[in-house]
Image (cartoon, rainbow, N blue to C red; front, side, top):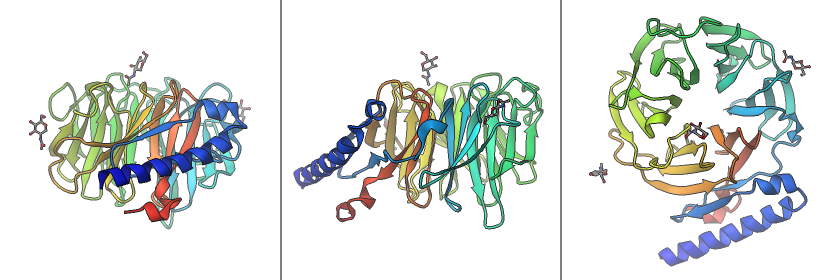
Length: 347
Ligand SMILES: *[C@@H]1O[C@H](CO)[C@@H](O)[C@H](O)[C@H]1NC(C)=O
Ligand SMILES: *[C@@H]1O[C@H](CO)[C@@H](O)[C@H](O)[C@H]1NC(C)=O
Ligand SMILES: *[C@@H]1O[C@H](CO)[C@@H](O)[C@H](O)[C@H]1NC(C)=O
């Protein structure tokens, strides 16, 4: 049986490879960033969508983060650099829509929160200028709606809402906000805020023990009410109860070589997708359904080319496509699930 699946996976890979190869041959740049996938199980994971976006010349800086608004089919990307647009808006089909650069200094993380009535995008800003040390909410056209933190003022150990280098945030369906602060710097915090910005709970200490952090870099929620944090400097993922903040466990056995930069779930909730920056690698790990998280188990690995440096990623709730912000390659790439291309391979 195992051999059968290996063959099937092999055949799938070969077909995928042919498609990729024929597409990539015309483009030396893209070919440089071609990738390999290794399978450890029957799961057929992802292939690079070389047609996304339609015009990659909009990537003019270091692309730090990407957020998908699945409801409206928009992809928001923030990049760093001088005299360039800081935020780029594409469609999930790959068409460029618009950009803005006002009120964004040094973007780090981004999150799209959409309801039927409101489309918004949140950006964490680690700049030292007058817009830095903040988390900002925009509407989908780039109008500034809300600023959290004290613009231009570094965090202190006193006020939890005065951020230092806020790395990322996650807004849940009820409007509650989970913030990781941050990306190096003074603070090592996970903060939960209500939708009217009252602090609900906080883990605020630097350290290696449970519920302490060293560069809490990425945060997400799963469907059973657990908060997952990529604790990069400690080479682990820590998990908390979203209502009480109670520590539920940690995964460290998958990240011995390098800590996780980014953490997200597949739309079916079955897999955790993790980026490892310097290894230029994405991992898919099995997500435990409820309660205690046990140990980490890697299902498959997507090895990107050397120096691509995947920083933060996001997953489309509609199509399951993974969008990866690659600082080294200075682009965002889209990886689509193989199953939608080889439906008969689904199991
Ligand atoms: C904003 O972006 C435009 C190009 O879209 C550029 O001409 C301008 O210099 C940028 N401004 C800043 C402050 O980066
Ligand atoms: C990646 O490598 C750079 C340069 O060696 C280093 O400064 C950085 O801390 C590394 N990042 C991670 C996540 O290991
Ligand atoms: C996780 O791995 C450790 C070390 O290999 C082992 O002692 C422990 O029992 C495992 N825990 C679970 C829940 O599998």
